[in-house]
Image (tube, rainbow, N blue to C red; front, side, top):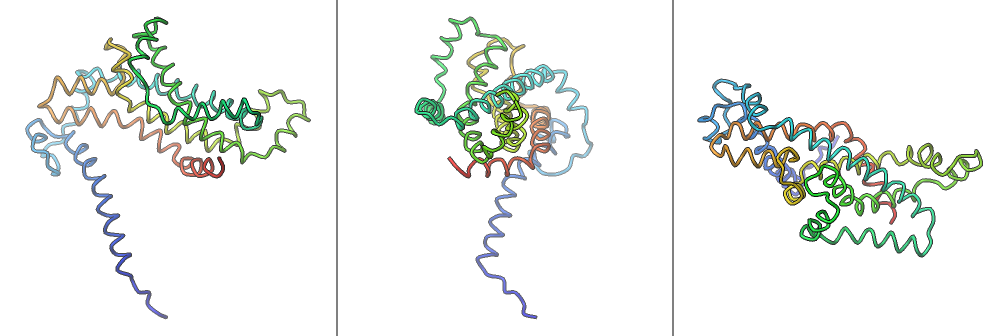
Length: 275
């Protein structure tokens, strides 16, 4: 049996991958481990375990940083906006993909132009003043829902092409209405790409800082990113508290990602097959 020779290029690739992994993991480890230290220990910013594990840091953060309010606001914004955005975009993409008229093609390309243009917050603030949506949760949800339309339509539209049209025809012959055909036939088959869009957009809304900064001035409307920003401004020397605050804000996103990760790669690849 011949021994398999290890190529130098393969060793170099492995070393590069290990270094890149460490670049990502070491800061995460430092944040987590320093969140359990005292104020003086965390100020050293080292990777050592704490002498005494300070689990009370997390209780202090919940009490002092108004973190629960920020978490609830972020869950509301991310959950409602992402659900509405993904479902509305799924229905629109299904119609645009199945009915290839000139008007529908124009609408599709007009929508995906939004992928290339940034949000004009100055104009958006003025529009919100006209419609009296400034400093309202409804206004923030509407903006987040609108912001995710181009990406979701682009992704789901390509995936719809992989769904056989014979399924639509069979549903029509069975007497299904258009809504029944979408929710009972098409939507279950689009589950991978719908979950993919939901995860990516949920993470985007959860981590967004600029939108609530421009559209809200009331602290009771601030999402978790704004709560962390305010807490950091008041406690710049309490790194143990800041790190604990950061860890708690990341946990919901990790849970969402862990639940839907098996659909993430398959949904992205399937949505890129045609377009």
